[in-house]
Image (cartoon, rainbow, N blue to C red):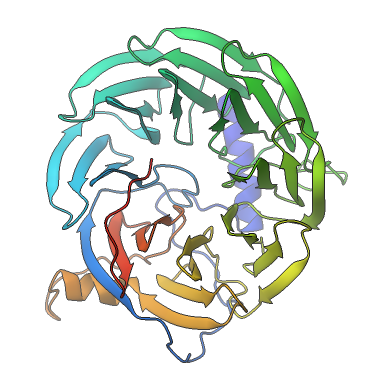
Length: 411
């Protein structure tokens, strides 16, 4: 099946399943979403600043994430804009427009940042100015941010390939390819680099480790096995965020499992049945998962046992979780940020992105406002006690816990 036809089939199937939205469409049925009840606010959260950063694709998931590097915030939008912002107040430092739609990125290196176009080109920009440095053809669309390690750029594309490119020139050093199912979710998880290994999840439900220097397959682990008669029933994509802590990679799959895998040899430490297409976050000794029904789970990082489960957000199309201090945060389809206690999963704070935007930007009642829902499908980014939330209107809102700490560094 060629790539264009495949996309049409995938989009049609997932529209029926409610997992994706056609571009520009807002006709989704939220009638079964759990209504929000009042909560006892026990956590002080301060909205710091909010700016418009350009449109992101509907149901973006891992696409066009927020990246923080030192005291700068980097973003890309689907219409070709790439921006650098001051992390303290959101002031724009520079912005360039590449003149064509973007599909993935940015990825951050020491001197460059990297984005990919919908025409399957990897583009390197100067971090300080945004000036274009080079372009390199890649095999297909890249729907997740690339990773930079040891002066190499690691790219995962939707055709089942991992390619590694030289940072300075864009020249391809090697490529690893595997076959993919006829039907997949539209997206890919972003690869991780741990020491000399690239960890990557694929739409066949497998997680692999490749040697960074030459692409040799070191091990592969089955996270999910396809079941059912139809292609839709057999979807087992690894598309969400996965994370590494203390030599263990924690990963989830759609219609599959959440698993803990040894980075050294690919052995399964533990696994349990659970479906997630947004991914997970890791805290000290805990794994937090947003499942496909928008239940939030806390699992024991050593055993996978359930520590708690929050069921009162079902049907609200939650984002991937983020860990901020002693809380875990998820965002919903209506632009509400829900802060849960890491201890027991109880609600401890809630923010409305529309209200925060109005206050921070002084929106008056007679001003024309964006009528789109402030749904959040780009994973919120936590850096120490600060949370960066980019909603599907393209607005970036930054929150900080009341007890302020120094601005942290994250790539």
